[in-house]
Image (cartoon, rainbow, N blue to C red; front, side, top):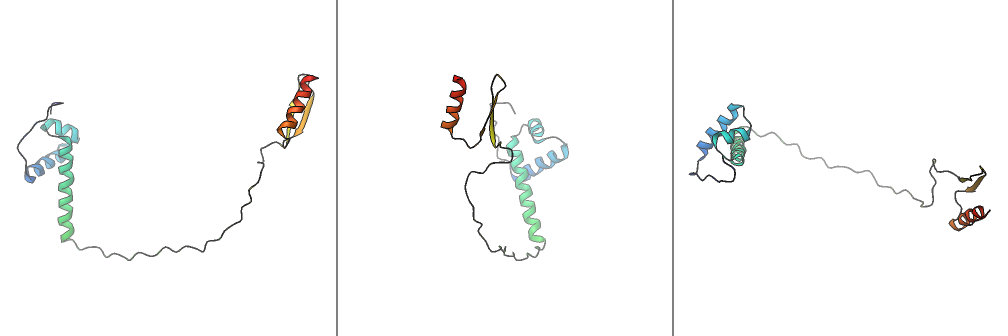
Length: 130
């Protein structure tokens, strides 16, 4: 089919499409290739294959006995229980317990990791002034 142009043709009935779909199935071509070769819409070809399969499965399911369905079993849930949760500051195992500051003269200053920001700022300023 040429791109951009829509080919309008007379309405094809189910028998015509059944023949087309059967030829497609036997061709070994993809839907896109077969549709291009036959100058058909790829969407229409796929839709008719779906419809014919659906119709075929509907007629075979009428003839075939239905499988006996087992009733659904109710899902049982275990009794729920609640666990108390305490929210607080928790330090991970990887978190340091101290902060170590190494000065250019190799002097080391260690302060607790829990130090307040203002206190740490005073220590840094004092060291910078020295």
